[in-house]
Amino acid sequence: MYNKSMDINVEPPKAEEKAPKKNIRGNKKVRLGVILFLMAVVAVLFIFWEKARIALVVAFIALLAALGLEVSNNDWDLGQLFKTRSFEQSKVTRDASGNVLFDVFGNTTTDSTTGKGADQYNCDDFATQPSAQAFFEKVGGLGNDLNRLDGDKDGIACESLPKGSN
Image (tube, rainbow, N blue to C red; front, side, top):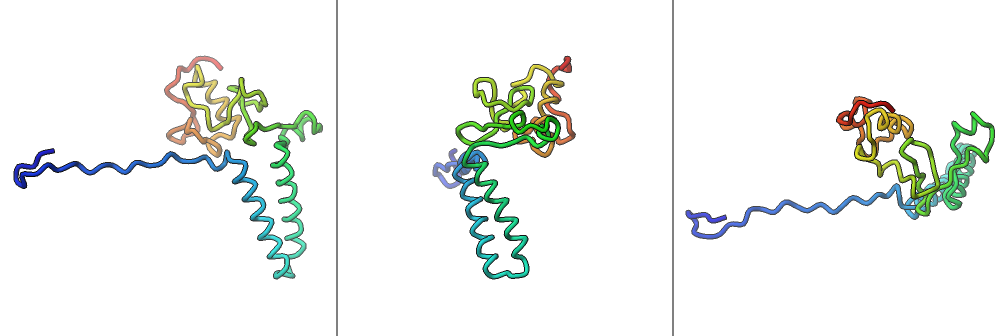
């Protein structure tokens, strides 16, 4: 831009470029690090806080279980476990990054050709609003709306899509 009063060229200020956000939830090393850090904190508290030792042992056992699940890339759907009473039918296997994959119906899957992470779905992945709504509710609704399928947070996903049948 040219400024006549100062007879010099003035460049407009450049907007700061933001680095793309890293998805730390999708990073297995970060999740393992958090679990190990919490185990260390519990161990230190166990040494110094005698009155809470029983609770700290319970917390340490829970963290050991979480570590085992994370290392083995396995998980169990508790709702399905209570319904079927079968560990085999409720087992959810994760992808190589340790993420649970979902198909467009919101069902968990281990096939990366038919599924992707819940945070990778956008309104463009659905043909109708009811199909987007079904997926939105099945993967957690407002509490797990990682890609903002419900931009205005009114509980209705992808309102701009056609209102066809599910």
